[in-house]
Amino acid sequence: MTKISGIFAATMSVLNSDLSLNVEKTIDHAEKLIDQGCHGTAIFGSTGQAQLIPISEKIKLLNKLSSSKYKNKHLIGTGLNSLGETINFMKIATSLNFNKFLIMPPAYYKYGDSEVIEFYSRIVESVPECKIILYNFEKLCGYKFSIDCVKEIVKKFPNQVVGVKDSSYNLFENLKLDNFSIFPGSELKLLKGLQLGCSGIITATCNVTAELSRKVYDDYFLGKEQSHNQKLCDVRGAFDKYNLISALHTFYSQKNEIYNNILPPLSLLSKIDEKDFINSLKDLNFTNKSPMAA
Image 1 (cartoon, rainbow, N blue to C red):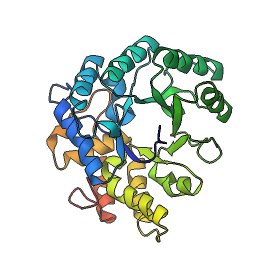
Image 2: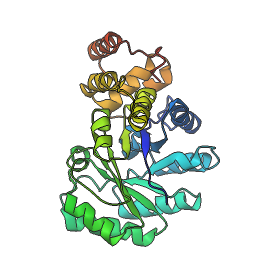
Image 3: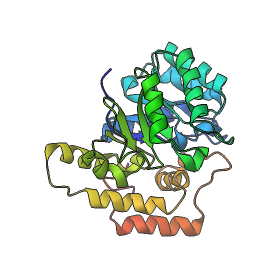
């Protein structure tokens, strides 16, 4: 398998007014990001409210996505705590010829490296055709991968565990493995990560920075001057002041009210925060009318 690399958006889920998943518009949103410059997307990551969306709706989306011209460009997040549900969902996905997955360890319970290795071992043994990108995000799941743990999992399953998304930022600078993809979870780490040999990024804010992120990525490999990286980092910094899902839905709702729909307990930004947030982006000459915005 070719090493996974590039700019990936952890794409948003688009919801109907009754908070059910709008399958067609969620797919359309993701694929417009590919058209804007992303090499691919991560469907049902944290940004896609994966932990809050019913499995039945996820399956409906996979069935529709299976006929997409961009089918092979999507990573499928599981967003499930249950080992059994994770395996069953992956089996359905692989039956539709999806085999690249982004999988975070379960939230809520406390555990260590040996338990995490057992969790992923059970998955691989049940779905051996899978390609897994580990998801390192202590803030959300309560566990942070160590370098030794990642190396042990990869040693055990070199053909299945093919990368890591590092949103805890303790791996991307020092983890070195052959033919293994490392994706920092922020545009702030994109350029440094590339300089260190990382494969790209998987980020929430690529929902709005797809073109800018792709320019930084392409300019690095073309040896060009980095004339877009500062603006990219400034935009990410503006979003980082708020809950990213809330900020993204607030940003998109300026143009399309369907993005006002968000699953509780998540919410849009308050009116005060919305005003400050939108003004901060305008100060950067980055608005939802800008060609560099989604």
